[in-house]
Image (cartoon, one colour):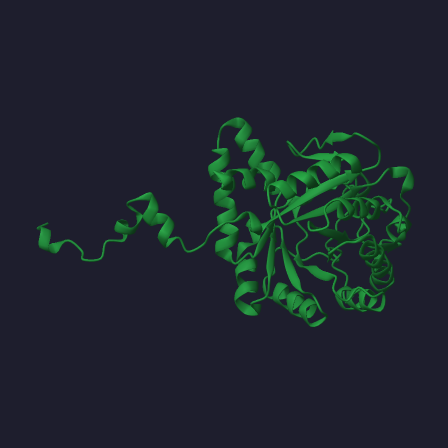
Length: 331
């Protein structure tokens, strides 16, 4: 081929040097994109490893405060607090969820007292508190939707009273966002945001998390398919998101993350609202196992996964890698 036959447009020119690649990058990852999920447990001076999640721990409140300090130092804007409740404190109704002095509420109050500018997100669902491990009230094998919503409203108000900034209903009960919004407003918490788990799938990627909050053993082989979404469905997710937005959700979560990038992209394109991806425990543990075997490059793969979320439309990402990513981004 003569030189005159070479293309005038060469896509590789913009890729040729590192500075140029940075200039033309269509998406960028920042520490401000990160939300760090943290597990809290009763006791003092405890950092208990989660067996299925390398480098993830259940922290007593005093040790949780150390992690909150790290988040502030790394400029991670928000943490999400999940409780690991002692089995002796659970019952079929998840009664402890409605107690304003429960583990979550005390943890929230401690973090907000020490670090008032750090965002705190609280999960609203009953599975950490119930003996059966389901997200709602159970009657002869059936999840009771409306009765569960009443309990969730009380749980949300307790968390807001403790100082929670963002309520994140993950239960997937019908109508719970509107009911929680009304309950929060009635309690004087008009400015507390709702980050709805609008498209939460009945996924096999949740196992390590359920162990971390000690709900997996209670649930056993039971399914959550009557309230969490079928992985086969995409249009249904858009319907769920539309309903939650109409009921007052300020932002929506798509969960799991990477296996559902198509749902994330559709949600961002169709609604144009803040969309949050959750890189769930199974995704995290799967990557960690590959890193430990030397099959994948740790730093490169973690950052690539994050930019995939951004490319698909994520405004923020819940990830257990958050502190690692924050350090990498400082380099």
